[in-house]
Length: 212
Image 1 (cartoon, rainbow, N blue to C red):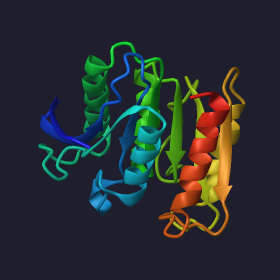
Image 2 (cartoon, rainbow, N blue to C red):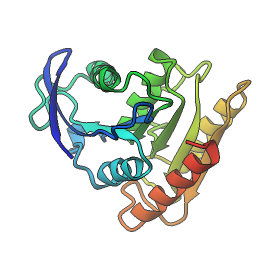
Image 3 (cartoon, rainbow, N blue to C red):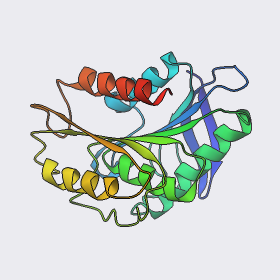
Image 4 (tube, one colour):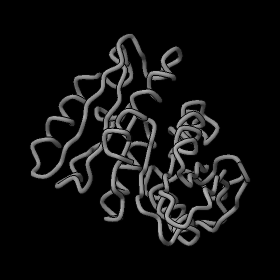
């Protein structure tokens, strides 16, 4: 997976990118957890999600938000990180102008950024949000939610109660034309230490369901 450096709003951003090569291959962007808590693009779940999309024929990128690794800039409370994600998607689209589908997948803080990106980019067809921090951040911007997707959460998540994510799923599903699957992984905490394979299995099953 080649290292790539691309221009972001506050300087260079560091990523890892796999190019499928087919003219119309779908694209996927992977967004990592909170940098203030050690999140990077090398997070194991982000790495596994990257490989899942790669194995399914996607051109896929994971990258470091500003101030992480070799990415320039400083942490910006999510505001700048959303702009970073938009720049990453721009970069991918220059090499995949005929992509037949566009997906975003995020873990924890990354899922919050990813779901905001949905509102900016109507070309995004679907999302996978793992451990969405529904009790920590405001998700009311999803009014209406522009894309269908899946929320994956651990039943034993002490950081973000699963009840808060169930409530988010119910709210989104009340919107016309949107279907959001809620998948609770029994026994998993916020880090999915022993359930990484389950996250990937449910993500892949959802993509199969969507024909993606």
